[in-house]
Image: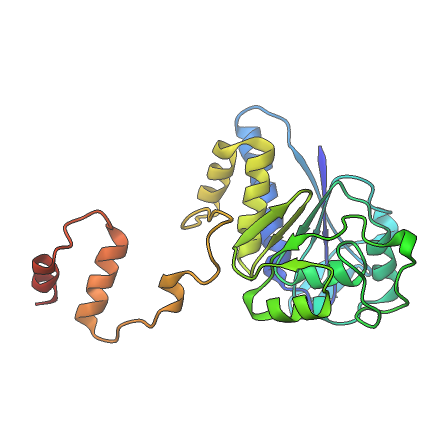
Length: 261
């Protein structure tokens, strides 16, 4: 089985932990339904047995000492308020020492990965403790990454050793996978499931999660239906719903006018 280690810390975004965790867990369930062995061995790891998320939700975890160092497998670094603040020295050291085969950065998890030197160039003062020595720097090197659109400019400014693209929902640069804001971490996990196990398993997981659609990596975080101003007139809103429900239907000017009354 592929170890999937999800980091937790005080101030983490809980959906960045639970979302990918459930996607990988449901992938194991989908395999079991087909008589196949599980693909992922999941663990949530933190410096302490319990952390408090940015929204106040408490999460239990395996401690760093109990888990041991990361050697191989997939390391998931979620985002949250805590990812953009100094991290405790034990967690910093554990992350800096990690050598996964694959690195997943959900939302602002890119900040934490860069701060401890897993990607790009470490920036002194961003995380607790001194910057790593040159020999220890950036096992994954300079990478193209995305993050929550709101913080992309800040990531680029504070970590110039990264190529920051604020637009995609998720993207892959070799062994480093990163996603945009919040729920995009689930899309990221689904993309990894598709790469590992095929599109049919990923689609089954998406259906189990009751996701509207598994968004491709080239889809913008600035999707038009989310960003454009919504109509206030009930008749126009009815037309908007009809267009979204059946894009290929009869939507001529006459039919829309008749629908609007």
